[in-house]
Length: 315
Ligand code: NAD
Image (tube, rainbow, N blue to C red; front, side, top):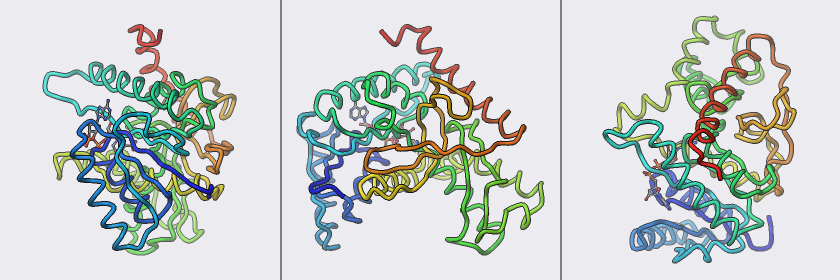
């Protein structure tokens, strides 16, 4: 860990708060900065988190940003700002709205924390990661999107639930974009080293894949709002890897430059995380069917990015 580590979180909604709380509770950073639109709410959150950190005897201190200048010297900036879809709003309207939010925030990060590593959480995840990459001009190692850790964790839970054992020993592999086109890889999924296919039948595995793909919607159905504990924790796992320079490998959204046979597209693939951000992309040897699924995923993310170009979003 660097001498003094600072993590800033832009957007103090459900997910942003869990990211901040996780970082402070684990003492991952010396300073956690909350940047929200409602200053008093951020102040209240910071007090609550600081008191929790004090109870935990964590050395992390949570501060409130009065303006973007307060994110200066952040090692990592997490972007969890976004608008939920409102009545009468199309997916396209929401896309443009969130793209504008991420663009504005990225421009501020570029000015005030030019050496930082940006982690995007806002949806649509892979497209927003592309927006941040393009607007920041940062090297691709320093602009990553969080989704794969969450998607893998969801399938991990469903496998444990189905088997009734294996908690803590299940390793799920996932690539692809965040959403319906995610590509779960049962062939590279194990329970205590045993291939999943040795423990469950083809139909059972497919059922778990479908359940995972719609795992977010299931939570919305119950709570009326989207998940935030597992997403926030997943982002904190990326932060821990970078700050501790663990070189752990997680599926993250990143720019592909030749890997998996694609160039100039953003999608989820295994990335080694260390103090420089996404330090290396790891390639699975995909079979024909997996390659086809991944191609579909790349295409669906690309078509949304292209729609932003058609709308002249990028100047
Ligand atoms: P939320 O509505 O609780 O929080 C969003 C916050 O963003 C709000 O506090 C809002 O005030 C703030 N905001 C909006 N515009 C802003 C701006 N310009 N500057 C600063 N703050 C701004 O939503 P949430 O549940 O916390 O989700 C946040 C985002 O993360 C959403 O886009 C959601 O779809 C996405 N998400 C992604 C994943 C993933 O796996 N990548 C998982 C869950 C949620």
